[in-house]
Length: 244
Ligand code: ATP
Ligand code: MG
Image (cartoon, rainbow, N blue to C red):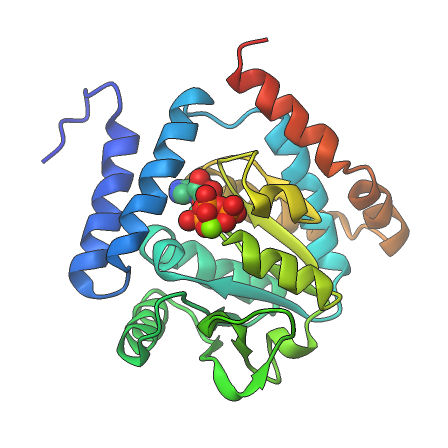
């Protein structure tokens, strides 16, 4: 048990989620390394959501609401960290959760699906070898016809740079959450939210709900989305890390 008084309680609790994801067969052991990289950047960012990340969340919420066919891509780390929130996001956007993992394993894909459903998800897709996106060699090229293949906007938190680049080259708009502003994913995405997924996904859900309640017109959403300059935001994040 981690005592609540521990100064880095939240971080240690999150680490436990990833470890238990590995034990449950949802997260790959390689996912531990990716998580460690995230932790390091979170430490440098002060383990809190910055104002610039909140602005990126606003633009991401607007883009997701503007999308005709939004899809949420889920890997083993994301499923272990925020399963309930993924289910909620999927429901408020009416967007499927499409499982996509790097280290090929049907049993892990099925495990992730079961875990998401247990946490309230209703629309979970598994990659189909009949369909693939171009410009990607790995197992991750496989998609579904009703999901990523025809999506215009793909939300891919904690993504690999290769796949982000490929999705963009396939004509998709890509939203990511990535603590490393230098990663190829953050650099190539349409919108990169530089924050921990455990914090940012709640903000994203709230913002989408707020925009929906306000019944913002497409034109207004477009202004919020177009306000985003990804390179400018990433430079601010890098400056914060460097304490400039
Ligand atoms: P890239 O392939 O984009 O250049 P990478 O190879 O360094 O990045 P990957 O393992 O491919 O990293 O992707 C995982 C990314 O997710 C890393 O950039 C890591 O910092 C980030 N990350 C890990 N845990 C979290 C988290 N909890 N919240 C947000 N981002 C995270
Ligand atoms: Mg990578």
